[in-house]
Amino acid sequence: MKSLLNTLTVVVMLAVVSIANATPEQDKESFQRFYTERFPDITMEDFGNGVYALDQDARNQWEAMNDFPPYEDDLEKGGELFNTAFANGKNYASCFENGGGNIRQNYPMFDTKRNTVITLELAINECRVANGEKLLPYKKGELAKIAAYMTSTSEGSPINIVIPNNGKALAAYQAGKQYYYSKRGQLNFSCSNCHIQNVGRKARSETLSPALGHTSHFPVYRMKWESFGTLQRRFDSCNKQVRAEPLEGQSEDYRNLEYFLTYMSNGLPVNGPASRK
Image (cartoon, rainbow, N blue to C red):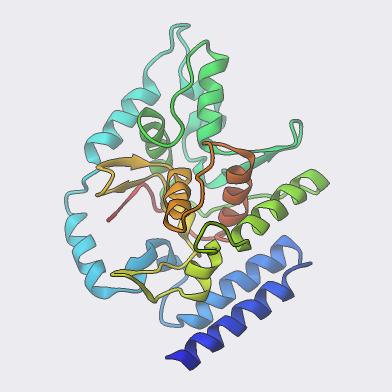
């Protein structure tokens, strides 16, 4: 066991060094190849199921639960909110390409006019402000339900995150990559320590999930939350677990992290919203 852990550590360290100056496309190819070689019996698409791609007993329970998904009422509410008119008579569909349907796979995107990463949740709130409405809390509640509904219209569409030929866009991507591999908190852990180096191993009673596909199914309905939560709410949970300070919703660091991590799953189908423990 110790030998295997040492081997995995070396593999990950070499991968990090080799991609330090790689292009985003080279990063993605190396990232995805690591998982397909580490778990050769798992299809690329199945990585979108997270830990349930690795743990058959957990998968059986999860699939049984999804016969009657616990998020159905919240998803229906998200659709109602999405289609409810603002005070000015417009609605969310007026703010988005294709009326907001089947667009989740393109977010987060880099806005070359503003030189910043725009997540779907940020775009939803900016739509509200543009129509004279107040901001919604970013990590849960109504905004998460609206994002979940929009995500459901993209089910099966391949993730397609674009990094424009723009120095600012590449800098945002690199900042997200750096955050992912940087250690933080009292436990001095990085995202990659759990989800690359120790993927498939147990942390207490939980199996550590693969990073590949992590972003494909958000917003997620977690049993412990009893509601939908956004990807950045999940980032908060990870930071708390390593005893680091969570960041503000839609902070630049979180948006860049989401940009990098979603790009790593390019080509995988959107399969959210989903349920998790």
